[in-house]
Amino acid sequence: MKTVRKGGVAQNAVAAWVTGSCLCGDVELEIGFPARWAWHDHSAASRHAHGAAYATYVGSWRSRFRITKGGAKITRFEDKATRTVRSFCKRCGTPLMYERGHSPQMVNVPRALFANRTGREPLYHIGIQELQEWTYTGEKLVPLKGFPGVVWTGPKRKKRLDLADML
Ligand SMILES: [Zn+2]
Image 1: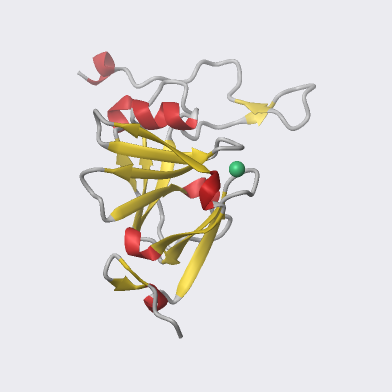
Image 2: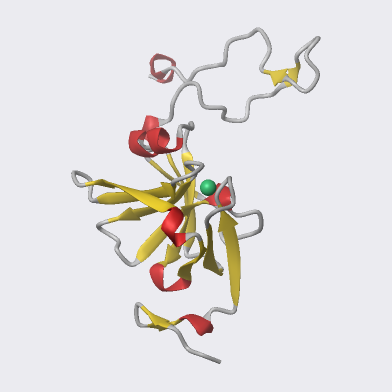
């Protein structure tokens, strides 16, 4: 077997790879199974970059990460102030990688790109103090009358955690 050395680690040491892809399918990437860790990122930057309430990432050692298709279709946005680089598909805009200057040995990939298990549960939260009040956090849902397939929290407003009640 041919040994591909990248970042000082033999990639054939990886027993299994997990494949992820962007929405249009132009780009495919792989990480070694199991991933290093996984977490939910509630920071404003990740919220904006994903256009979502929060982003869930799987962190992989760079030595256990590879682009297997469409490398030329990837474009990047470098945020010099935060020393972060976000890469995404030129064609469909799917976020692909999130790299942070303070941990150059890691590549973080949105969990949603993987159809299969990555070997890590997202047990951790970063920036939880930035959780938005409109984020769905598991409230009970009921069918919306007259709209098949639509559920909602009902007419009652979402119960908010009120600091005044806690003091
Ligand atoms: Zn794409």
